[in-house]
Length: 239
Ligand code: ADP
Ligand code: ADP
Image (cartoon, rainbow, N blue to C red):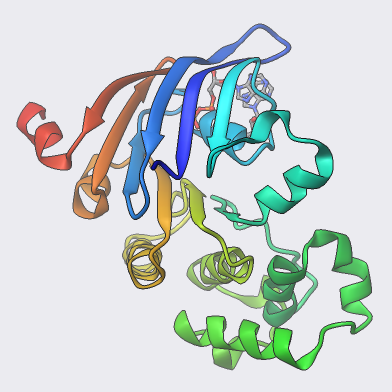
């Protein structure tokens, strides 16, 4: 049973740009899917349709057997919590501590302001600290997010996604803003955590070499369409 089904997904932006064109594929539990393609191929739009940041023009996103793009808003919130998102530019709340950023993943953004006033309970804090320890950031928990290096910021981004207790991790160019050493560290963390916690992942990348190193499956996109879908070894045969 697939964890995610993408059925005939099309996205046309208001200016007429066709970012996704009749795209279909299934993702099974435990897959580490890497989507590759040059800038403008539609990778970001695809992930944003899956977590409902973007509304598809046509087609369906089916998560755990449920059509998420037609759910009522309350259900959408619930579903979105099982989909953890990691962004290229980290999307942290700069003025807040590392720990608070992670807690917001756990408690939801609606509680952001209340959270800053201290509604977090001991259990939530312990959980957040345990996640930070996994990514080697326990020492930094009281630092402001904007005092961190890029690699550290992305480890907070990963921690925040994990704090949601997701089934599915979506990462949109998670290493595009990082130097090579941090990039390897971040990809290792994402990959290892998905293995350990049996999470399914879809990771957008534009570097084919990185994709080949981590992916259990590669989807190649161009002009909003899938032009390759298979095992990394099949792609290396072609390159
Ligand atoms: P990628 O992630 O592969 O770089 P995107 O999904 O960001 O691809 O973009 C696919 C296409 O859609 C590009 O032509 C891009 O300029 C366009 N696009 C992305 N976002 C928007 C938007 N909000 N409005 C209009 N066009 C957009
Ligand atoms: P990426 O390369 O990660 O897709 P971009 O720099 O292309 O990032 O896009 C940054 C933001 O601008 C995104 O929110 C994207 O949706 C939006 N965007 C991209 N292309 C267009 C466009 N042609 N018109 C309007 N918004 C766009």
